[in-house]
Length: 114
Image 1 (tube, rainbow, N blue to C red):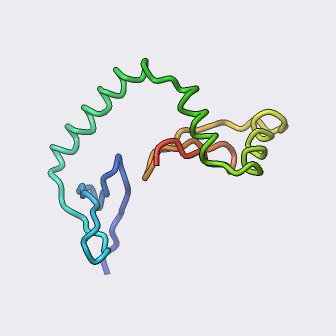
Image 2: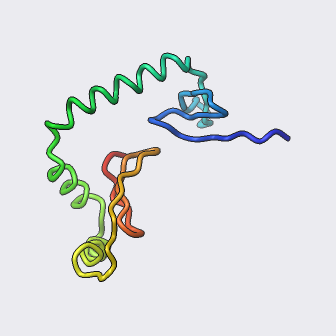
């Protein structure tokens, strides 16, 4: 049986280097619709150009404050605060991109864009 390498990149499913748009059919099954790789690469490049131009207008503090206020219970909120300000471990926050955009601090994941 042939093995396939499957990844997710900017909302596309990538199977063995080929790009697919993921959709659900009426029966609830996941459907992978083949996409033109050249078109996808152009779209990704243009999205990066737009992101570069728009990032200076982004108020990161507002975005992260909103994400922190919405996504955590009081217990998890306090745990994250302690990780960032009271722990002897120097956690290095890292922005991650996959099915959503989030930030990982230690074992805590802050969803930013679902």
